[in-house]
Each structure stands twice: as structure tokens, then as C-alpha cells.
Image (tube, rainbow, N blue to C red; front, side, top):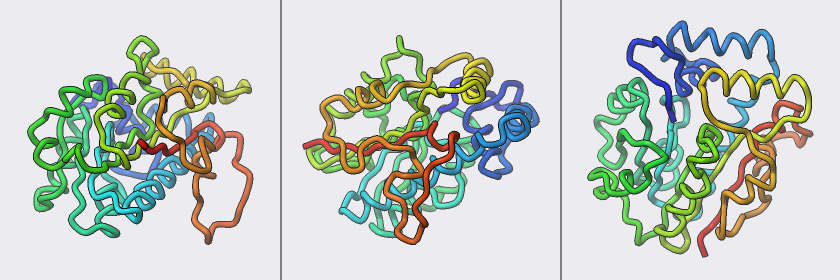
Length: 264
């Protein structure tokens, strides 16, 4: 989600900074300045972007293999390798995917990428206004909320202030999706040392909003949804590929947690 985006790159964009940290090219000098701060001054923090992306890919794959054929990706960010529609359609050909973002760069690149994919679209929408997203013509065209759907909130809710009710955003979707639907959330966890606290302060100072949350607060975001194994864990440890060697997460990798919950 891009809460402070502009087409001329005069202000840093959450989506474009994230793109830069993942090795993308769709960013401006103002975004690279923020990204370089993390690369140079807090180098371990770059792992957060990569481990979060890995967990997202595994979550979509898990849902598609389980039979989910429609996805709403809220605050999707810029296209990169293994986008949600590519992962989903690899396992569920024709799966419907709606990407939602506010960043003009995300919208432009997404529309170009998806121009010939009739079951995938990108729309302009603010995660804080779920009702407007739900009633968007493209959402109504592609997504049938009477059938199971995967709702994705990957690295989005930590950009919402408490008074913007992130739990209420999740609850809105949870109350309207069909039984058998799933909600995937990844979110920054509060740091416990000087270096990680500096990373949190830099992000909030740059974008002027958001908050990292405790484990208890992350559990609360899921409300009455049923958390699936392994619960809320560091993203790098969320259902790792069997081929991956088990290892303990670094201090930085512990700062991005992921969880998947089902509506019974």
C-alpha cells in the first residue's frame, strides 16, 4: 500500500522502496535514498523484504493447492518475480486475482503486465476503505464472495495507525467471505534492541505513519478466524520449503511475522 506516493517521485513510496530492496528497477532516487539507509546503516534489515516475499509465495501456493481459485491482494506493491497470479495460476489455471494498491507506479505497471490476462486485474483502492474495494466493478466481476477466497494482507497493516483500525479492516473481510476462505497476514513485529528500534523509527519517520505490533496484537488482528499451523511465526519459518535447511531466524528475520487463518 502506498500511503505517500506521487508520480514524479517527489516523496518516497512504500511500494517503490520495497521494490528497490528486492532488487527491482521501478523506483526513484528518493526511494533509493531510503533503501540505501537500510542497506548501508542497517544491512541485516534487507532480509525482511526477502523473507516476507518468500512467505507470501508459499502462502499463495498452499491455498491454490488446497483448491482456492480466487484471491484479493490488498496493498499488492510492484510486480516482481512470482507474483500472486503467477503462483496461483500455476496450480489453479484460470484462478482469479485482483491486485489493489494506491501507488500510481504500481497501477501503471500492473495494468501493463496484466493487459492480456482476463482473470487478473489491478485496481486503485485504499485498504482502509474495504467496502469501496468490495464493490469495485472489477472485484464484482472476478470475485464471488459466496465461494472461498484468499485475502492477502502482506506487509500492509503495519502501515496503518491504531486509529485506522487495522483489526477492523480484517474483520470487514472476515465477515463477508465464505466459509473455507483464508486470510494471510504478514506484519512487522516490535523490536527489542537498539538497532531494530532504529529501523522502526526510520520507517515511521519516512512515511509518517504506521506501527510495529507485539505478538499479542498480531494474534488480535485475526479476530475470530482460526489460525492454521504453525500459527504466527517469523516469515522465514512459515511453512518453509522441505528442501530448505532448517535454521533459526536472524534478529532481523524475527521482525517480520506471518500467519494464515481460515474462516470456519
